[in-house]
Length: 92
Image (tube, rainbow, N blue to C red; front, side):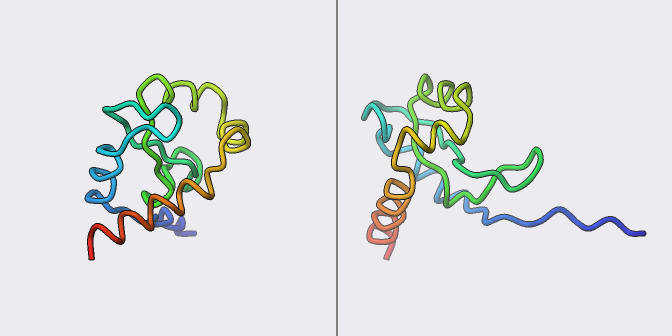
């Protein structure tokens, strides 16, 4: 049996560069790292369009908390929607 290829996720290096230039969604500090808020499967990052800008200390905290707790503590659906909307407006 031939194994299934790894599922592809939405990758957009330009979007991730833009996310890293935004202020942290928690503290407002810069510079930021792009934190993927969803996973693409075991050991894989999710879509780049799920990434949010986090200051490095908040990024470490997000991983220490675990995805479910971090998501519950912050309205990530709203944050991601606002980021995507702002990106689209700036890149028309």
